Length: 155
Image (cartoon, rainbow, N blue to C red):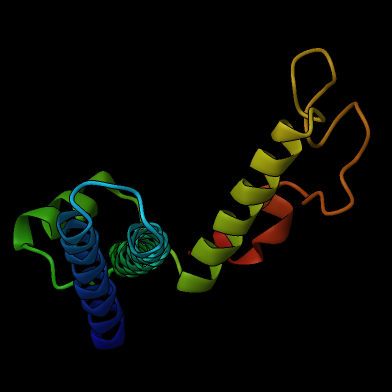
């Protein structure tokens, strides 16, 4: 994380310096287009692009961390490991739904992703049948949950 922040900060500083360079070159040339102003504008453009790349990388890092934290919280909640408040634990116990294993949660997540892919490719759309039924079978089609998760009956 520190390297991402450092890279973003450095790119920003370079961008600001390039902007100052453009203003300085314009002032020295009396507002005329010269080789110096063109060079400073080109440098500004390059620094702008590098700053945008650094921003995109920082945003990707933040998004990946959000997904990781969300996944960890989901697994903790589903497995009953989460140090959540007693009210949410009592609510989970009152619902009668036992916690599921992290392995099962990951398998279900993969199954959902495959179903989304199948729907995006049209194999599960209206009129073409479902992922398990009609239409062209997807090479990674999963069997129904019941058949895949034998531990369902054991809990």
